Image (cartoon, rainbow, N blue to C red; front, side, top):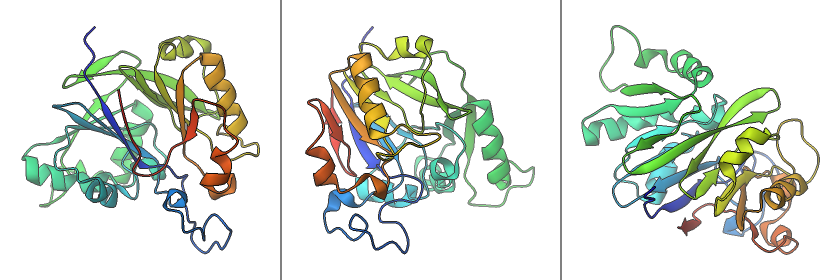
Length: 258
């Protein structure tokens, strides 16, 4: 299968509270290193002709402005938690500029949340300026957005099913702490994987740093980046000093190509 060249931009790499966290005076939250400043987790996937965002965080508007995104072809949502969908209203800027609805791809659980949280976008009587959304229900079947191939991967966020996605040789998984063996087969042979690694201590619904490293090794993927990082992880420069070869902490603004 033909695979287009892709550029991946990390729009945000922080957990639900972001880094720095409101009111916190810890060494990470007060760090002057820009790699310790983390908006909520999202990535922009671009080919020469197509641009797709995974998750519209509460920081979505600023993320689009900071990355200089002028054109967006679709939004893909991983799950219905607020730190992954709360910025969806701001796609209306693209509605206006592009003069069309924004295709939104999500599973049925996330669709229910969208219709509840953004009910005004689906009402019979719509007032001017609301987001115009075209919902597309995802299952586990692969599909294309423009020339970008997308393979959904179901993972588990404690007891919640969450979708990760493989775009050609790039796999993005956030908010997970378990992947079934059948879904792991969809990931194998990926050249780059992104996994969530919340902190070093155990968590009920996220991989720890060590757990994420172990998954990368088990999957035998040559390059990994970790995201959805909390201030509890520690300073970026301290953590990366102890990571194995081929494993890195992602940071806001990081771009990778393949």
